[in-house]
Length: 321
Length: 262
Image (cartoon, rainbow over all chains, first blue to last red; front, side, top):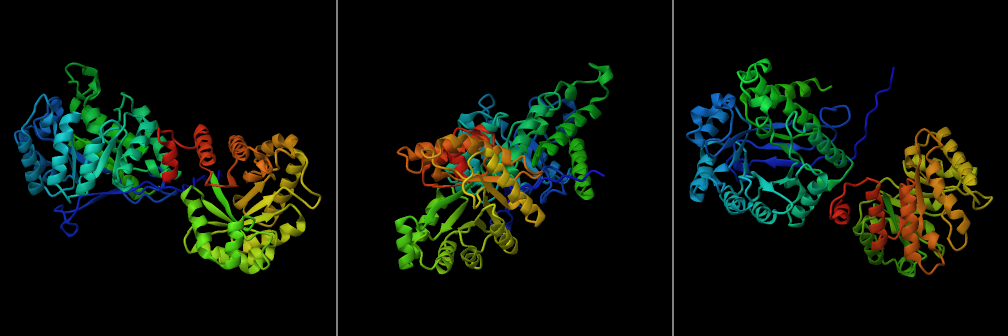
């Protein structure tokens, strides 16, 4: 019989905690802890994996612009009010974690800032799950609005983003002051991921408050490239490179539902089968691959895809093989 | 790269005086400085002038351990001195060092096993300093065979090819460097390698340049550890950069700072 070969890792991934309960000065009913891995995904014999990957439901502050019909079927009833949307994923779909994208602040939409801040305040009251808050992607608007969001959610220990190598100072300072965690985004580039973590930590934010968004591609759209980047970063972390030992957040839904294979209707491509099956499957398969690459937080959209990936994670952890 | 700081050595007058006066603060400052500059472990040597090494070495160990929680390399040619220091050492220690002579191996491998330490072995014997690569390999084989036969874990063994000053043994430098690579081929578990770096530049005018040139060449041949002066910033920068080029660290613009944040 061939002897089993087990790697002996000396490093580990940082642990990041999201959400603060009333005992901790916040108002969330629970907290979510990610990271802490001492080996690669599911290699239980090699090292401890103290925290399962978690799924965050993605919601927007406005009615989404380009979500395909398959997603409309699940959410269109609550798109008139994002607070209803948040409540639906919390109560009906039993979300553990919520990721709010403030697309309404984008210059092309330009919603009133006070309106957005009120939305966040009310969201804290209506839903008591740990929160991820992300901006619209426009640096100037994000730098104006996200620090204010950070202020009004002070002590809730949110995960707020995103910062990049060229734009990290303003939001990092806010997150540092208000006790939150930060998302450091790099464009599928290990060198920039590492550099950004150093820049952030130089401002005084400790490594256990940084989550890396390595940026991902969906199945068929650069997934393999994403995988190798994440794997390389994770291997370095397990070999004690503490600068990049951060957990990963992956925006799976956003990328998967951009794929033609996920959203095209069956009447356009008959042989591809029903989009109600194909779409969630595309998102689910992308998610599985990223979990294997070491993803810690998956931001997803389709309830069925989320249900299936959760089942998969539970199964892998239960069998402990 | 496993860096062992070399500055706590009775050969240096400040250390010698501190030992004589039993002034802990001097020793502790040198210890902390070396760790701050990137040393992973510290070599502790009370020097040839010590009249009572069996007391001085443990005293040094205890002084250092009050401020530093890192492995210590206990450096003495006398096993009984090393044992006295081992009795007070908290972390997994490194014995510095044995030679390939049987009578040395018998005592020091036994000591290393009893105290669960790592062991530095010089490819050196009573016959003298090896004159070429083949003699070094022969001595390395003797050391490894002894360790394997006596159940000393090869993972804890560091082979030292014995670095000689370039102005004395210029013709040997290439052999010394190549030995580092060939030591790895002797046994199924490749033994780790180490050098006492400063020797290479002994008596020269360009000490720092020679040190850092030698070590980058040694790193490219697979060197695992070195005893050196971690306060020499250019030397440490060269070590970090050599490892970067060998893809042992992920590049980023601030890679020197990143390494030091470890």
